[in-house]
Structure formats: structure tokens, C-alpha cells
Image (cartoon, one colour):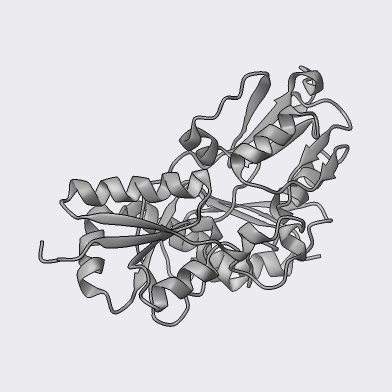
Length: 298
């Protein structure tokens, strides 16, 4: 263990981002390394009044952290892998990924909006909160009756807005809800399975990003890498990359080792179309998926 200085992790300051950074910190401390955490505010944290699909560019939650990596202010960045740009800035790379937490989306419903006989137990014409183009498009496909209302803020803030009655229901990544152990009393919780409501590529996975020149740290991170998840996530994100997508693209991709599930639309205000491809362990497989999607693009 020749590394002499503390490993500095750069992260956003939200409760979930800090949970993720501390998870990695504990993994590294178990291996005997000293670790410090530095909080960095990103564009996505600063701009709270716009939906993601209306914001310019990509990398809303990562650019400032990546800049800190490149300037050597921090040694390691911990990201929600789904937020990370598919094309890495020159000089950076993802050296490791975590095991995958539950990839489901979770629908949180106020009791007053719960209807047993309706799809997902959500009443007709309910107001559902989300700012995700992918979630909007799938809602239009599966529950065209609902009213979609913009929802921003960190996970606890979103849940608080739901509880105050600003929405009948909201959709969140289940992994984040579980990690934060939030109080969901008074809410009905419905899992939207990945083959039904397709999550973002790499949902539930953490990405550990470093400078490409940091050979020593790269070797350390191999000890906490999950190679099976890394392979599946590479496939999901390759499809996203070939579609030239980011947070604004209504694209869900999830590989369960048997099938690749895809939900896609060319616009957040158009309903998603759903596809299922038998999984193939081939470098050309993502290209074939994308060719099929583009052939069926409206």
C-alpha cells in the first residue's frame, strides 16, 4: 500500500451524493487507505427552475467535479453512473463501478390518489411529478391520462413536495430511496419493474472516475470493481452513446443478462416505444440495437 497521501473524493453535496461518496470511502478505508471528501456544487445543483430537457448541453451534475479532477483538486469522483457523460473528457476515465442496487423506478403515491383497480394503483388523471424526459415519455405511453408536472430538487425535497400535496405521485430511482432510508409513511410505494418501465442506462450503479494518469489509484480501485456489472453497464451506455444522448434523451436501456430492454422516443412529449432484444455478448450488439431503433424512429 505505497500511496502516502489521503485519497480526496469529489462529490456533489446532496444527501444521496454524500451517501455514495461515503460508501466508497468506507470501501477504501477497509483496504487501509485514508480518504477525505470534498463537496463541489454543479450546474444541475444551481439551476432548479428548468427541466433537464430544457437545459443547454449535458453533464449537468458532473462537469464541475470533472474539472476538479483534471486540475488535481480531487483524486477520485463518485457519480451516479447514469448522470455521467458517455464520452469521457480527455484525461479522465471510469476506473471501477459498484455492484448494482435495485434498478427499478419507484412510484410514490399519496393515499388520496391511490386507486386499487387502476394501473399501478394510481387514480385516473393524476398529477405526476418528474423532470426526466425518459420518464415523461414512458408515462405518455403507459398512462396517457396523467398530467405531468415538473419536479426538481434532491430526493428528500421531492418526497417532501409530494407529501405537501403539490403532486398526486412522483417517480424516483428506487436505489436512491433505499439508500437514504427515507420516511415514506402516508405514501403508497409501487415498484415499476425494469422490463415494464425501463430505467436509465446504468441506473443503480456508481461510477468511480479518476485521471487516466493515476495508475496507482487505478490499481487500487480494481479491488472494489464489479466486472459483471461493468460489462452490462458498458452495453447500456454504448447504446446511449450511439444515440448521442444525455439527460434530455427519452431513452431507457436495461440489460438483465437475458434480454436488453429499451424504451425510446425522439421527444419527451411523444410516447415511448418498447423493444426487447435477446442478450448477445458481442462488441457489435449495441450497433445492431441502435440500427433497429433508428429504423423504427418516428
